[in-house]
Length: 138
Image: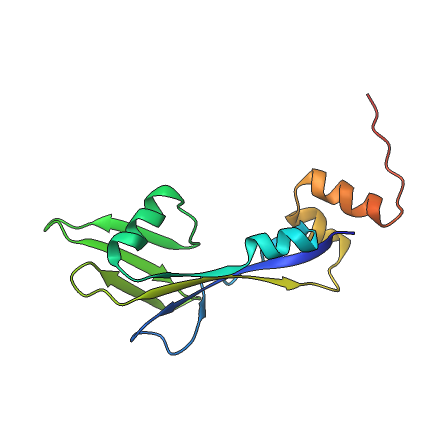
C-alpha cells in the first residue's frame, strides 16, 4: 500500500551554510510505494561549478533556484532558502554544493489537504487502497 510523503529538498553549501537548508517552505505531497521512496531519495554532491550548472540545465530540478550569466559573462546560481534567506554561488568563487532529496512520511493529513495537493489519479488510488469504492463512469 502506498503512503503519503512530503518531498523535501535540502541544500548544503560548503563554507556558506552550517547545515542542510530547505529549498521550499511549502509541503510537496506525493503518493509513493516503498520502492519509489528509495528511488527518489538520495544525495548528490556537485564538486565543480560545471557539474552543478549542467545539472540545472538538463534537469532544472532544484526548487526555488535561479541560474544565469551576468553581463560580465560570469555564471551564477542563487538558492532561495526559506522566506528571507538565500545563497549565491558563482563559477569564480565556487563552494561545493550537496543536494539532498528526502521523503518524510506523513501520517495525518486531512482529505481536504490531499485533494488540494495530490494529482487526481493519485487521490483516487489513495482512496481505493483504503477501501473506498470509486467507480469510473463514462
